[in-house]
Image 1 (cartoon, rainbow, N blue to C red):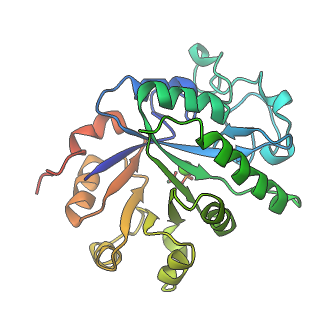
Image 2: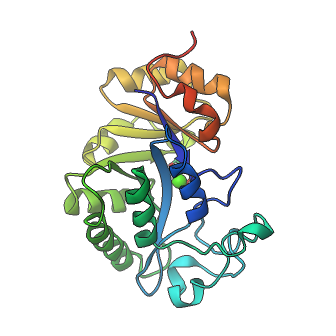
Length: 252
Ligand code: G3P
Ligand code: CA
């Protein structure tokens, strides 16, 4: 199956990681998977945001893991993108779950690393809250947890062994010991950066029995090439433009 993951929603036409973006995904019939970034605040709220800091995608500032949701909840997460999105706020994971359930969207939850000197406790709390919230999902929703952070993936394995996990790699960090890391984390799925990815490397990973998804692919020809090489899925900022590739058949 060629899976198209809508990376942070549809960030070319809506502000990334907002409910407006995920609703837009839900309104597209053949769009089945979204990717979200999840983080924990100082007062233990799970929120959907990519960066460690609020500065780029909201009209407030500060480090997410040291900020209080009370101080974040009224900030605009859409104004930076366009005046018409002024009312978009930073979504909580619970708000996201309502959208996912309503539109039958499968979800790849990327766990963002927890920063600061309370990171171990906050990481444990993040996983505990994640587990509680996943219980609110409809039974038909598929979930894939992923992270660059091996501690979070290990904690997820211990608390949520039944949920599939993927290990994220940047190209420069994909060392020859990748397989022992992935096996240690009990995963069969790899999310690798597209930059520098070769047919030989794809073939090597797949023939070892791992599922491979590639990020972030915004070029149609490259997406088609990767599917022809046998990758399972791609993360893209233009999922709405690449859905024709989400089938068994790709152009040779
Ligand atoms: O999960 C794939 C991709 O989202 C990882 O990179 O920085 O876009 O979260 P980033
Ligand atoms: Ca991500």
